Image (cartoon, rainbow, N blue to C red; front, side, top):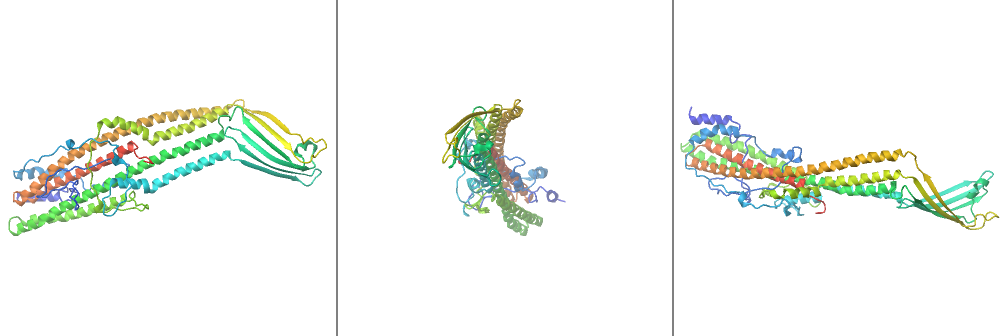
Length: 572
């Protein structure tokens, strides 16, 4: 058996070889002129460098992990490495050393708080690329769960209105009649009571009592036209600076304020999820372009090999092997199309039109990855401070502490004696009901009422409980601030690592494409064979996919960094 046949058999048995079911495929040039997609170059292609990118590493429980299957292909490096030495020994000389540009030197440092982070309210048409800012604008304006979160404001407002009901003016009335018995009498009364914001109340009313009254109930009797009465109750100790009614009203005000950081926390999560979905869709499109491009290369090679077989220059198995490769790459292209369409459907959850209807983006709307930017190392400290001032968790804890402080003040209020002063005056009008005319003069009264538990254990127990809660909130705030600082540092480290991977994988892709193009040229000249071409294309495929992986990781890391600093806020 010839050396070529032995190598061919090994190649067919190895699952990681080019055309295998699990192989990763290289990025293809788009039909429309997109220059930021890395491509597997044909012989006539140029060797220009282009860069791609933007933001985000995700946690393993993040929604982005649902779209992880958009990276087609298993690891094939070990299988390819087994054939590398034998193929390299037969390759011809004359390959020129390719030159790689330093990507770092061509890019300027930019702030992660740049204007590109601000969503723009634009509509997506079928002929336009779907921009990242359009997806964010759609989340801000049309995402149903965010709109549901806005109704937390209504809920909190309703609670505040309910708490203010404790100060509603109360109308009181009574009709008490005794038409039978020795003492027949009829009493009617109507009055209003207005609780005051300083803990007391003001009251006024009218009553009339007619008939025969028991001698011990003569105060129920009025002159012929009835009696008008008005007065005021003023707290002198307990309930003077705070009482249960004011405490509930103030706490409901803080509850209303707490709706805003809760909405912001949800917004941050939705924007992060939308970012993951968008970059998953873009990456899936790039994977499909890779699969399509290498399929075209194999199909273009078929006619040439067929001519060489007819001329007796190569053996027929070479044509059969290439046809096998075409069939496998067609299947791969179909699989990557499926994943591209699936991620487009997932993205439609966040991408909506003006009426809130989901928009499923089409393949021709794929924008490709934008150019990535290196990380500004000097900005980390400033970004940590930005996070500490923006993160909703800290504001939520501050508002919760203020609520608890109100409860503590009310418990302290309960320690004081209930000492109230009441002053009232009354005047009967109309025909006197007795010869003594004892109802006719103006009457007034000033009183002081005292009520206090001697041990006051209920108030002391409540104070002890609330002191513990306040101490807990202080400790929670400290650890939350520390965790926020760590979150920013971890996101920053992930972003730096992602940038380094982008630079390295881009350089690797350039070399791999150069080698693949040279190997194809050698095959056309008869100085190489299909096995070597397949191996070189496989290396280029893997490098292209790793470059897409790096770009996707970079943009997802940037989304995480954006979330860690809480840059998304309502009203921006």
